[in-house]
Length: 295
Image (tube, rainbow, N blue to C red; front, side, top):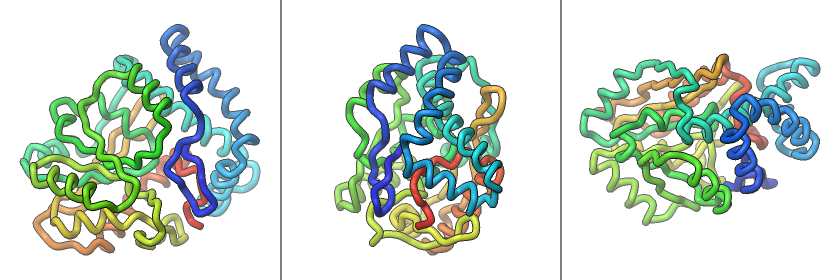
């Protein structure tokens, strides 16, 4: 999970390569169910040993979801457990075990038609569910996907995951802040009819944010994805991969802008926040921003 600085998220993930490698070996030699079972012990460890993350989840359950103390305590455990499940699933699906999962799609045909149109597309996601679960289905489209990602992950974690998952084909555009090189790479990709994917719920610099209400309280969102999509007038889609019961994932696709009209960045954010709020009401325990998002 991502660790938090006093100002919010700092772009780094909590944990180390050993933990990832351990679960990779557990999945490979004992099975996915054994990994899920061991995960319960990991959750019991993390609740007291990750106080900032635990406080953030507790506040989310109590203040944003309106849970009472007992319900919030139960939700706290399930929240960590669900997050761990998605990490295990990401490794298992990427390692060739997709056949052991079930996948459902909402508005998939409309989404594919948009990708087939030949125009550049901005795809917005969030730190909910497990977007990598859909990488197995990207197929030929994967070669045209560019994921804008904060390049603050520990290299040893990335190497462990990459060694034990199949090649997905998509490209990564690393970013540590607003730079001309990053903007040029994004523009070239969109002009070439490719797809550029952003997480719309994280930022590093408070100077480049937009404010909007989410779950009844104002929060900060990164300005860049919404401003860029508005300026370039390209289609904008939101995509979520949400875990459901029975080792099942549901992929949600929703069109926010067609690209043939000028929409202000504030209006795009309004549509995105409404979409994200609907998902959180439906899957409240899959909000994986482990810091004070509403600070």
